[in-house]
Length: 162
Image (tube, one colour):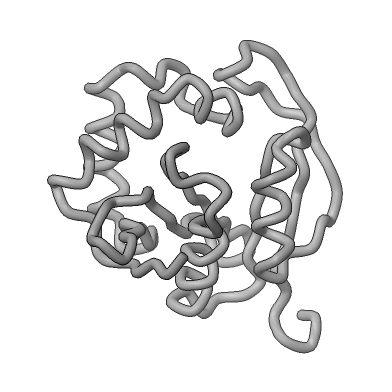
C-alpha cells in the first residue's frame, strides 16, 4: 500500500489513542504505557514528544487520506531508535513496511536501532525487510502482558557496515 508521512496534527491524536488502546494491538506491541487507557498520560506523552526537536514523529496516511498510524525516531545519536504503530485494521497490507521505509528516507542518521517482542514475528519481518538485522536479544517488562518477556534487538547499519 502507498503511504505518506506528514507532521502530526492535533486531530490525529484521537486516532492514535484508539489504535494504542486496541487490546489486540496492545498485546502484540507488548512494551506499552503502564496503562494505555490513561488519556491524560497519553496526551502528556504526545505533547512532550511533539515539542522535542530531537524526536521525529510522523503521521502515516493512506492513499485516501485515512490515518493509518504513526512512525518516529528518538534517542541519542548512538542509540537512536525507530518506532511505529499501525492500526490493526491495516495490518497485513504492507503499511508498516511502507511507513518505515518512508521514515528511513527522512531520518538519515545511522546506525538506527529497533526492538520488538520476540513473538511479534510480523514486526520483526517489517524491520528486516527495511534492512535491519537482528543483533541479539534481551528481556524486558512488558506492561501489556504484565510480565518480563523476551525481545529482539535489531540494528540498521550505515552503508558500508558502520
